Amino acid sequence: MPRWEPNARERLRAAALELFGSHGFDGVTVEEIARRAGLSRRSFFRYFSDKREVLFAGEDGLGTAVASAIAAMPEPGPGAGSRVVFSVLSEVGEFLTVDRVAQRRRRTVIQSSSDLQERERAKLASAAATIGSALVHRGVVDGTFLGALAVELFREAYEQALDDDAATPFADRLASVRKDARRFLDAADRETASDLSARQSSTAEGDALKG
Image 1 (spheres, rainbow, N blue to C red):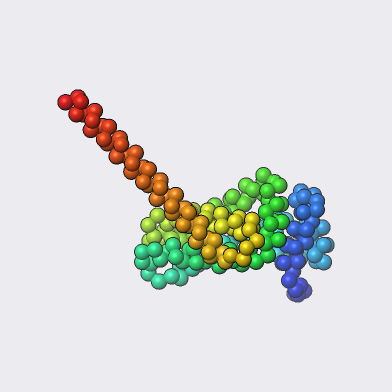
Image 2: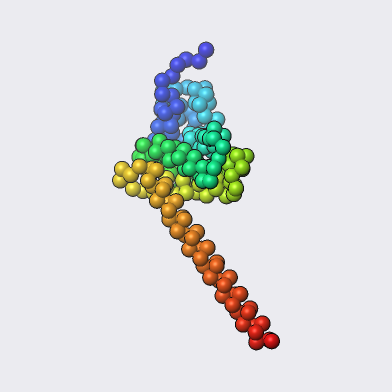
């Protein structure tokens, strides 16, 4: 029977971030992380599959948490899927940014390695696909697009939270990012409509001249 190890997961994360910051990601072994946390190598693998997962374990649950909420929602009406998605993402973001110091250190480690950056992109893409699939399964039109957009907006709000010490609720940050994205999309729609109108007008003039 495994020995009870209080707060083992968090101890391992804290030890890993400290060591990564001092020696770089590639300069640290699993054994060193476990030793710094006061745990065994076996204990490390009880919580994480490898040292990269110390940085990314939380992101595995992002898509699953949102997908579970989507599956549990009543028969979706207009906008229901979007409301559920952003509500859960707000809760996750609030939790993740409680300890901004640790999250900033994590970001610094990831930014130091192209392999880690690629892994983060893959994790976020997987979360977006999971959310999109859950939305499509519930009959949400453009669910795949909404899943991808939601994760990208979440990432932007998360980055803003790490760059700003203001005690702004994550839900407010995410709402602000959504509003900015909506303005951009509306402007793009207007520009597209204007270009289409101009082309149609030019075509009509050309036809008139030919006649």
